[in-house]
Length: 155
Image (cartoon, rainbow, N blue to C red; front, side, top):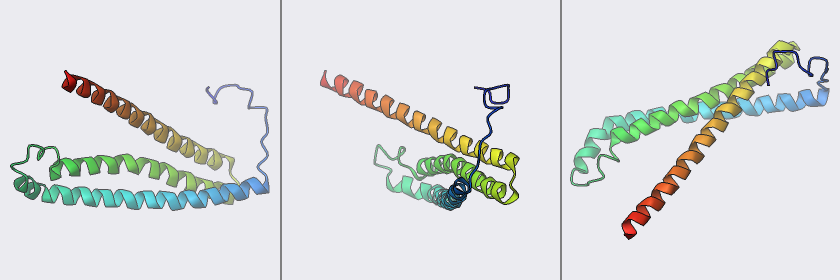
């Protein structure tokens, strides 16, 4: 639904009570905390990825006789951690922007800033929802792959 066009909501006036403002402020504080934890986790993932890249050669040489060495090399693990760091960064960013705009909206009593905060909250949930859909799809594909592998090994 396009909320920028004429809609039934234009004539509806929403009351933002003191209790709702308090809940919104508490939500913004927790969102700030969680986003900072998300940024810290992203930083640790990047550091770990760089460490894995650095020791990747040493791991590969010690696992030279192992057929799974390429799959679990430091470079591969570093790449996965770097990918996860990038993926983890965006929800933390959206949550931080939501919290910042929410606090500003309450202090400035600004409807525009309040709308901006909700836009970032929407982006957070949209990103998280898409990530969940992708992960469920990967699990389903993996499950069917295991079934096919099991059936092919049975014959």
